[in-house]
Image 1 (spheres, rainbow, N blue to C red):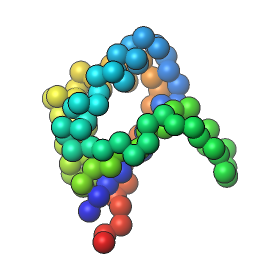
Image 2: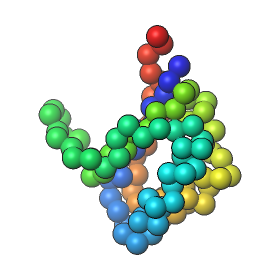
Image 3: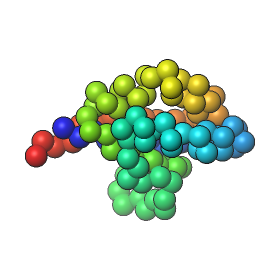
Amino acid sequence: MAAYLIVDIARILDEAAYGRYKSQVSPGLLAGGGTYLARGGAIDVLEGDWRPNRLVLVRFDSAAVARSWWSSQDYAALKDLRQASTETRMVLVEGLSQ
């Protein structure tokens, strides 16, 4: 069952470091089974008070595949870079079974 990683980059603390993260993350994410569905596009709040700064949506074939990528040694240094350069909110949600 597909799973979706929803990432809200709520605040960027270090533009240069976050720029390095953005320029380096895609190859490993794609190799780890992720597919971008949205990456920093325009946001139109329709209801509520959630005001994401930068939203990223990634599809994985399963939650296990997503967790494997997120906790991998290959991603560890980039994850540290993102965590040091941003305030991030991230959730993983399972999709519907077909």
